[in-house]
Amino acid sequence: MTENEISYVIRGAIMKVHYQLGPGLLESVYVAALAYELRKLNLNVRVEVGLPVVYDGAKLELGFRMDILVENKVIIEVKSIESLAPVHHKQLLTYLKLAKHKLGILVNFNVDIIKDHIFRKVNGL
Image (cartoon, rainbow, N blue to C red; front, side):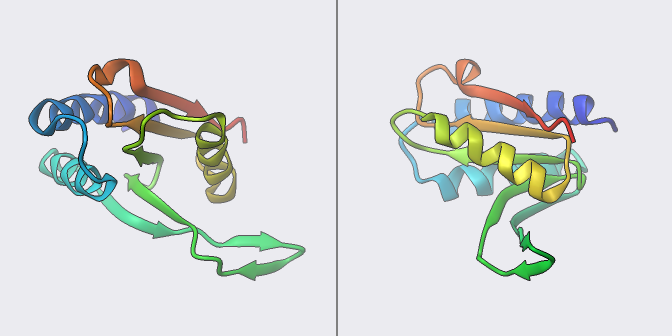
């Protein structure tokens, strides 16, 4: 599957999870439910994937974690907050750059209408 095909499937799973659970829960609940839905669709899903930072040739283990990595291609950053700030978008772009992946999805589940709070982010590599 291409990144775009995976993205389409992810958006559908996000909407299903939000429809079933609604807003107001902890981020960890949405991560677990979304990972479950994506696995049901036979996708390779990894949760809380470590992301090292390489600085000046040295690998720094700082504890950065991608919420969900799908098919080793698409990063999903899950939030459950009042509103997204510009830093949340930048965080995902930085994760894409560090992991050398092209596509990421930022989603905030703590909203009434989920479709307006799913954002695709592209790393120009």
